[in-house]
Length: 342
Image (tube, rainbow, N blue to C red; front, side):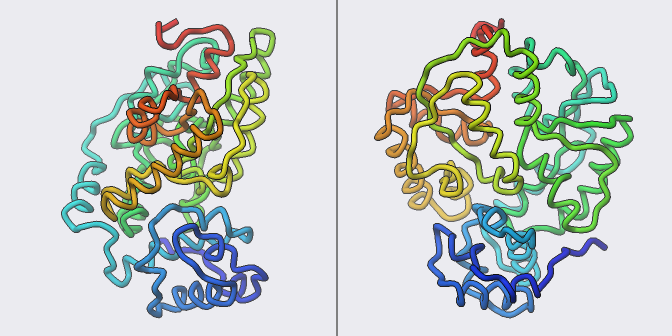
């Protein structure tokens, strides 16, 4: 019912083949990259279908909006190519199955979406969120299911996401601030790429924080710390939001250290690699990433995703770096103390 909108001619006329040329896990030149992505579109075999580690970065590298990663994951499913053992894939799919387990606050026209992460209830407090809380929702009925593109499984997304769209629409909201990249991308990128209509306005929480900090600028006291940002794979699906990160850091007095693995060259947290490709790849990516943070003098590691934070906290703490979610850092800058709940 829902088909990916992919234009073969955009790839044939592409001057760079950047989607695969820039890949940090495969080595292809421009002509090879263009040939392989066309082969994938035409349903032919390609080594990319087996070698892709699902970092999502090609979605950002493609400047033509042609969704190369959505194509790769669709073709993997078409050909029965698993990225993880069948039992692990089944376990993940079962976790997200709608079962009527959800929580809804006092909904108004504007609401916060926590997706499937109740941890956001602990951090969306104070002055930053007083204009919207307690209008929020989270749980399986509102789970975007985008994570399943890691597993080469678009069919479960195409089956479930329309129901999630309806669930949100039935709340009567007009604007939703999404606190997780994949949730925002579901309604801003992936859903529309497969022809789904979105009946509400989607806002990424980076934009929301930026606008709230402007409103509360008189409360800001620069933090004067050096930090590294752990950019999650999910942000590649909504890369246009990344521009807010350095602006927010300037506003709150955080010096983002210059390092190798940042911006387009960011490395994943490694957690999904461990499930799908084994310990060695995950350990290598994490070590290079954390070495890069320490070598460049980071005092804090700023997280955007709780999944990344869970995967890396112990290791960065062992290296003397303090983990902090971006929301908590912004709250600190306006004089609040998230650790004490004030």
